[in-house]
Length: 314
Image (cartoon, rainbow, N blue to C red; front, side):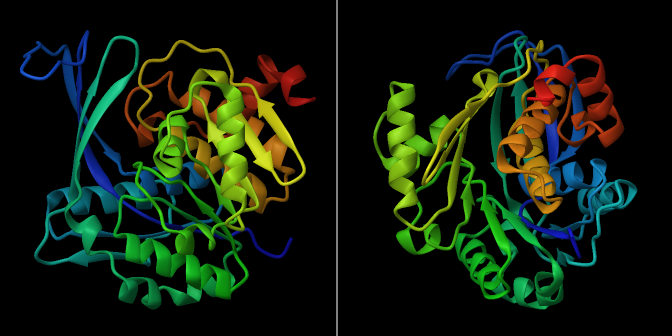
């Protein structure tokens, strides 16, 4: 394979995290157990995942000209993510996420997108040279939808494989879906895309099959502890998750998507790529924070060797 460069277009945030026993209900105040901040944002998390697993990762995003922005850029540099296409906005603050994590590792998140919403088509156009040489585009929905669409169009013009993680959940037009090669919703995001409740595995599969009619090659529905279901035109298969004690699920989906992109760029078959991505996501939820929780390639290989070699060998 001549190149495995991956362009990640998306969000970058500073995560402000409080650990509590329970997530408060509307009108309720609870006492937190601890507070910390960590680099986050779906796009940046995915780019860091790729880099930690040994891949060339190019992040296209936007931060503000403030201390959080500087801190986030420095962190990406430390993680060996290429930041040539990470732009600054002089008038809008860096994106911030307020995250509450309960004792079971489940979370509730509110995002103030800030400079993420200033990532525009013109910024993508300024990044055209990485599109011309990268193999895969990975993007999400924490940036303007017009920017997502333009990124997908540019990827299509360069014959890149496009992966869209449709998170956070929102409705998407047929025009956008027709530009996607691989779609990776979780169950909630799939429900939003389809517009109906999903009460069984069969309904999930049938809904995913319906999305293939837009020209999508594969729909991979992530199901947390139940693994993932992949629906292609000629096949449907489920890939198990690893069994872990979750501490913080914040970056699990991002770790999954970043890993999937890298493994496909490396030429790994889709089923094994999903299995590897499940393992990385499973390790991620056993640790606190977003980017700090993502394992390195060496940690993942050690886990596979010691704990799951028979599973990986299937």
